Image (cartoon, rainbow, N blue to C red; front, side):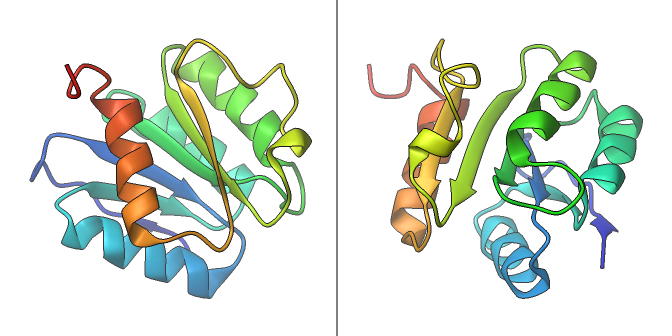
Length: 135
């Protein structure tokens, strides 16, 4: 299951990558209900293809950390060669330590541990996409 959905409802597009079909579908629906455009991929290989095709539209990469083929950290490094200033939100059932210090820093990377609340998801997305909103 992979999908491309682009609309300019809110002007922000989230690139969602997860190998778990149920979670991918649920997160996509939740994000779209909140007005975000969503591009989704169920494998890192598809994600890299979509990143190249839609690089001018993607504002945030939201990716699982543990996936077959390639982990989310490697995926984010590769996608950031295509979209250098891309903000990244990692999600995982593991602790943030699995991400490593290389992927973190500069206020453009965040981590949510599964299970997380929708409120925590939105709060983290807003912090990444609109860092000055709290001022």
